[in-house]
Image (cartoon, rainbow, N blue to C red; front, side, top):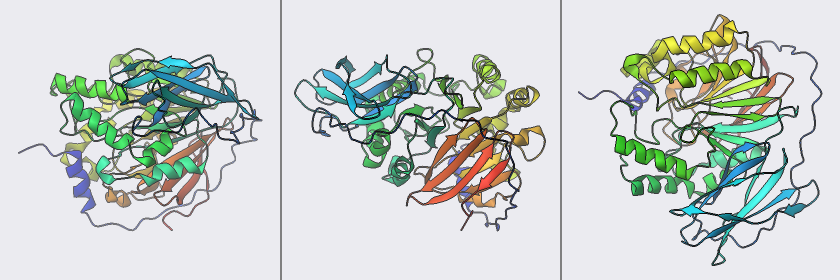
Length: 465
């Protein structure tokens, strides 16, 4: 009998009878006087005209930017034109666009990755690729990260689980229109490549999603920060049993299709700094696993994460975590699903969480995907770990785990539902983080504020109206 998959688990839970949700409002908590913040650079008030009319026949996947630094950003496109590309770009000075020198953009099989460097921090950028035949890509927008000492607010978004069979992803347009973002987390399962085996297979699956107008709207508006889960390769894949050729082909497709700027070539886990408010730690929770040895992250990655959290002086230390780390009720453990989450690797889970609590670290925020739920919750209901929040963002468009309604709200689970959605965050050096969730109709269905001490400071939007 084949081993049950996570999809089997979700569907089994969804068949259970729903329980009435309840919630206990926590009184507002005074976080102290706000710290004076440096103003952020203004958003452009005029569009950059670019250098040509966008030609989607030549640039069907649009453009992307990714992994912004205070000094620059990585820019990406895919062309089917087969001729050399030139990157045209401009920066906003607060009143007008100023064009920089064009840059040659080398391609490999039509994929271009260009590092735009030597740009000042917190600078809005517009960019467009042009080929030698005169065809132009769509125009993309992004901005460099703020310097590590800058005390302005940092805004970002997140989602997960964008199954191409869902069709369009209106929640992505909703979050792009809601408010500006410094970057956007793609937390894994950005495509569903189950059954793909060749380079052509993986490229076609990625192209199906990236060619969608709703995904391009978001990609053209802000920078992506990517990690992966399983479906970028195949459902529930295991490093010990997968065909190495399929794994390597899937990995190559992922890296050629995303604007990742690795700290170390070929290594997914990395850290990015966004002012005094936020430091981001992007994890690889999939490719280093060894269930028999109890390894969820390699020893190198886990030690890197612990040391980075301890050394960071950012107010918020945000961990991009493809699979939740919370302690879930027993019903979530059926079909051996526990083995696919941090809970199935309890020694490493305890090592990381004990490091956070024993070191007295504050402002550690996990942002996770995977379970097709839309939740804000504490890592554990009681004890020192209850001050650590995990936010499950998405799904952007995959089957909904309606069993999320079984999680009783008011204790560990501040909010729990299953909504096609994307989440917007605003982190401040005053120790607060606003969390806004938007559905496919652009409706804000949750708007609350957390603080670094583990409190829910404010809830503006009625939960389950």
